[in-house]
Image 1 (cartoon, rainbow, N blue to C red):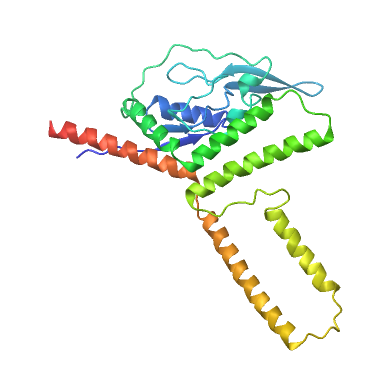
Image 2 (tube, helix red, strand yellow):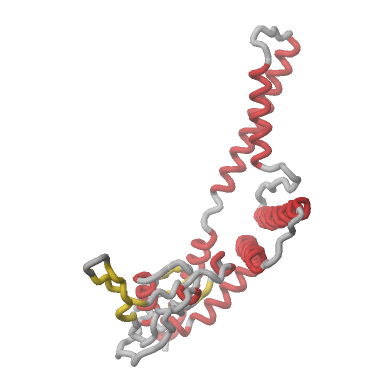
Length: 283
């Protein structure tokens, strides 16, 4: 049975210049799937010209893909778009700059596609969207993008200090509730939503306990009962620390969900392409 090479290229809105040329080549020649976000759109070539006093930097040409499309301004649009935080900001990308050269096209050159990847993209994208719709990580990421977008679009802020504090506290709670929903769906320990609590509060409590212990006179003699109580308390604290460490390890083992989803997309592509090859071979 014939085999084909399968590859992925993952990019974000901050991917620019040479990485965009690479992404465009992968996409045009259909050598692999381009995943992630729309790239930066930096498709111009600049030249530094020495002068008697200083230097002048001039834009002298533009990059074009074999398809004839420029990478300038528009960048490279991925085959499958993953949500990312850059979507919340309008100030990222060549298109956000004043005076940026526009996107355009030239006559394409003759080239051949290596694999029929594009015919699989609709099915791959549909499978990805169905997984993302029920993924706690993607749901949480979309919530974070929405929150950041609302903050970016806000054009008024309260001048009253109490009102501003209340607004910031509401945003903090909303972020924690979104994170807690993600954790709940994944069976992870929840964060404390109470004001002033959380990891920082725990550190403060530990610091206060240490200061209290230092403040006690060294000459204080513990009774046998007190010593026993302190031993039990120390054992409880050690067990709590062990549980906290285990929970932290569990969170660290989560892995990169975007990378994991990329692997699922690649697995889908392999499955679909092999199914097509098998059908052609049987025919």
